[in-house]
Image (tube, rainbow, N blue to C red):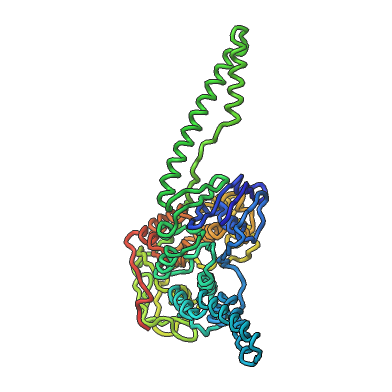
Length: 518
């Protein structure tokens, strides 16, 4: 399907990949993994043609049809959901028009010779429409849109009224309906809840063509891929098997690599010592010169020890509060023009952790915004301890200026801090010094998450509201975030579609909004 030859790419003096050589063959189901900022999305953008690589070439099978889920693509907001989904079959509708035109000519033509030609053409077109599934379009749309929860938006709903996450789900449905030969998905589970991730997992397990998926969802990757591409140490290495097998093989590879590095280092020291002791003596000068040649050759081919990057040091600052009860919600109805959910009841004590779950669009983010008084409640009551201080992590990063550097963004909220203090805080959150100087819009999704986490860790609070904080975060960062939540003495309400992450939170309660009847 694709051969990548001698790919090199970087940004400024930052090298992402050197001499990458990889292939995608029929039947490959690839998981693209790596730490935040390693270059996963950049590689996806190169494969999808959005950016050009610095050097190297991509050799495609000429018949390969590529489909790419671009979460930032613009779509016609005047279309309805069903109108947009039907564009996945534009070629078939064009074929149907041709078939109808032929049949119209048949009904008006009396020339026997031309009728025979038109009859054959009509039959061939009908056969092609049937073989390509034209007459099952409605059932195909219904199957996938229902499976991913898009049908519940309303098929006649205008795209313009959908949220950003809902539009991404809609684009995913259209892409799956198109059935490309190579499907490229960048973090497809970020906007899916548990039941829809399960549906997508089954769909991809049965998908007959190839796909390449960027994801930090370990359970999801283990379930759907048969090969891993790991962006690491300025290259991309292919591993057979799922994510768990990749971890095992990679650990062994690093151990062997570091053993070789240590052995070479020891040999280098021995040669240097011999040359230093024998280079000036006439009797041994010849041997010393010979050892110098061996040393030169060794140093030319020496490998450096692979050092694992340190995980972020996330730590939420706590503001003491004496009262035991933090938040009481009674018979709450939330929504905008009409209720999304009625009858929400929550009693949160100091120190308690609670996961808010439920289908996409059920009202999880709306609940947080209602608690924070950003939108008005429809009915019921919310009683918040007067000494509560919130720390709020928004799912859709609401930076003051997307053109700011990470340092400038932190200083916007904390102008009294010194630049040295800001740099230290960002470094602890997992952002390198070079990344701190780049505009936010040039950072990866995971790096933007780390900036936002850094900002909310700077102010002491006692009630955290975290809305999908694991979206885009790599495995190490998610583990650090879970540890920070567990260590936080205050209360935490968090939204997450990842069961693996929720299981890391000690004594965690759960409120599923989908189980509350409207």
